[in-house]
Image (cartoon, rainbow, N blue to C red):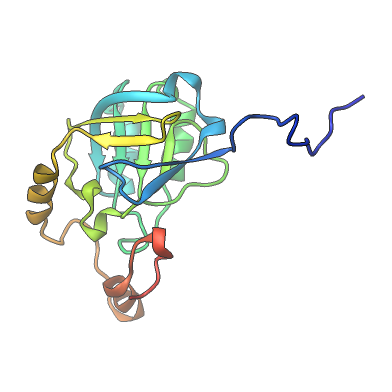
Length: 196
């Protein structure tokens, strides 16, 4: 007899849900991952950041084999305030490469429901809100642990704030018209990305 489609609480398919919310000094408001689709070898990772401020640069780096095993790829300025873009093309290409079980991806943008691997989305607050994500530089050490629900960058609060103070506002495109009005007043996606 085939197993039930809907399992009772006394006999769940798994003892945790499919999604996990991570928090830490890199993502104070959290970031989501589909933990049910993460290879066991990537449930915990500590490695250097490889940072991109847009999708094109990240995609080109992947195609040109510039991303190395053990890195934690950050693709930022994809959140609602900056552009509301998806990093799905990148994670799809990654899935077809030998790096699939060797790198993680963190984005403040969205991913498709079909995304898999160590792919974290909706990192909040997004980089365009001058969050810790905007302070990360290539080579900074990031560590996450999905079981512990933690994600941190090895920087002090003072280092993060100093780097944020050096941002120019030119790290992402600025819109005009109605999009420009929204962009100026948009708050964190963790609070609905509504106008304040």
